[in-house]
Length: 210
Image 1 (cartoon, rainbow, N blue to C red):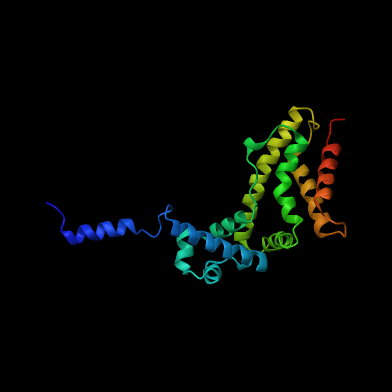
Image 2: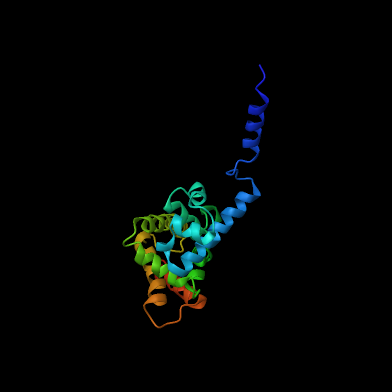
């Protein structure tokens, strides 16, 4: 038996106006507007400002809209950070050249640390991660993805004879990142791209086979 006309119309109308369809241009515009507002909050006030309520107010949308797209605060913070360029290169992007791969891997971080607006956000993230489990979780995700590529890079360089074979991945990563952070946040030396490249050169030289 055919469905009553009213029921058929209701089903059709619901299907064609689903507000959560990812291929709907309106959905994409909403997502973009929300993330833009969130990124401005992040830059201005740090990761503690990224809550569903704050972002909804800044983007002039309902809190429900924000929750629909990013169910947890961790999802929202991760998407916001990704939007301002924190993506780590993939394993497939590695070329096998130690110096080139180091520069590629560190380029997004160096770009942020040499930017007067984004560098304070890094310091804020490090501080907030000590007290905020959500910020710590997102930080740890970034570090894990960075370490994965760094570890492969080190393995490739050891196999290719560019680094000594007893190099420790975690200590090497700590030394490299520590050098960046020290110069940028704890010294009066200007941290620019030339300084970053010099740090990478030193890393390669110090860890070369003897």
